[in-house]
Length: 113
Length: 114
Image (cartoon, rainbow over all chains, first blue to last red):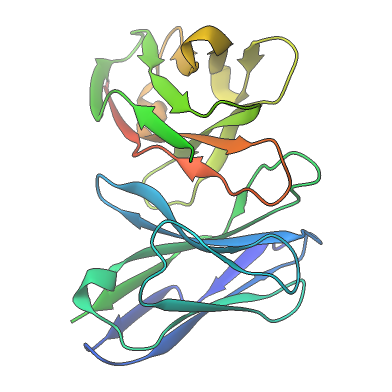
């Protein structure tokens, strides 16, 4: 029972490089989310996808793009990484039609030099 | 827009002390309320949740929370903390309608000394 799987778990980038964080869930959830976690800031929503085929901006979308590839997968792309994007990124999924409870992946720690 | 405020940034307690972490939200409609916990080096896990019914909800590991609608509050409590409760605690809320995302507070770090 994998739940929510994120890759990679760790990544170091140079300023201006691009990368994609991958997320997959096997719980047949409709909704998927990307959050970033920074000390003293809690979790802030970057983008979310309420259902397959839709994506919406969250609180801090600048510098990111997302793709809801299918019901299982939701990727987050940094086109030109900046030091301000150094953070821990969490993917989550939920079935909003049910409880709205989120199930989280284990996180991806990204450092931008 | 919804927002969540957690009053305490860092709480330090001795084992067996009682715990209460404050959480207030701003939203005029019906909400779902959650407390999540993040142990050091781990991802977030659900402690408890409130959707409807009895405003006093019980979660895992002896935690409970009380929803007071008139105060827009959802405070987390535990009568006697243990060293293993050392973690970061997040209050979260979402509007009870399809397509709304969970909004988190900034978190409270709890340190319990043995």
